Amino acid sequence: MRTDLVSEPGDANRPNEDFAGVGLPASGQGGCVILLDGVTPPRGATGCTHSVHWFTSRLGGALTELAVSGRDLTLPEVLSRAIARTAEAHADTCDLSHPRTPQATVALARWSADLVEYLVLSDAALLLQAPEGTVTAVLDDRLARLPRSALATDALVDANLRNREGGFFTAAADPSVAARAVAGTLPRGRVRALAALSDGATRWTDRFREGDWADLFALVAKEGARSLVDRVRGLESADREERAFLGPGKTHDDATVVFAEL
Image (cartoon, one colour):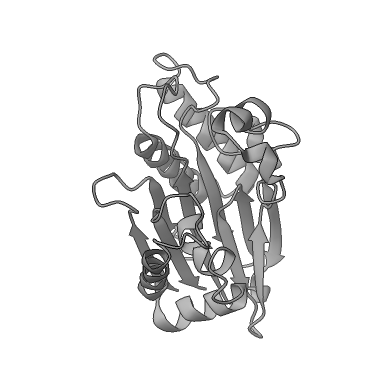
C-alpha cells in the first residue's frame, strides 16, 4: 500500500482544525483512512470550553482506534461509538446541546482482503478509483442542495438546519447522526485507490471548476497531495480581489488530502 497525506492550515496564525490519519492493522490484511474537517464557529458562545482542534483530535483518535481494532463494527457503528466516547470526555464541563458545540465533517474508508467500506458525513469528499480508472465521488450533498436564502445567517442555519431533519448533519455530540451518513461497501477488487479530502482541498473542483472529480484524482495520483493544495492556494490568492469564486467566505481554508493506493 502507498499513501500520501498533506494537511495545511488556512491561516498560519491559527491551529489547523482538520484531522487526518491512516491505520494499518497488525494483520496486514487491510487498512483505513480517517479525515475530519473541524467546523469553525462564528464569534460568540459555543457552550464548550474546548477548541475545535481539541475535538477533532479526540474524535479522530477514537475513530482510528475503533476502525482498526473494531473489525466487527460497521463504519456507522465506529462513528457512533467514537462520537459517544468524545462526548463523554467533556459532558461534565460543557453544554453539548448547544448548536455550535465543537463538530466536524467526516470521510472514512476501510478495507480488508474482501471489502472496501466507505462513509461520508457533510461536505468532506471521498473519491474511489476502480481498476479500469473510473472515479466515483462519494458525497453527502445535503448542505449543497439547500437554498442560499436558508443559509443567509448563522442564526438561521443553527435554528433550522444544523443537525436537523431537512437540513444537514455533522459529527458533534449526538451518536445517532452516524446513521445519517452516506455509507456503503464495495468488493475489494472494485477499488484500486482512494482519496479523502476536506472542503478546503475540494475547492479546486467545486469552487474554481479547474476540473471534475476524475481530474482532481488524477492530479493527486500523478503529482501528489502537495501539488493539489499548492494549486488551490494559488487560485485562492488570485481570487482575493474579485471574490468571483469564494464570495464573502474566507480566502484560505484548512486543506487536507489523504491518498491511498490499495
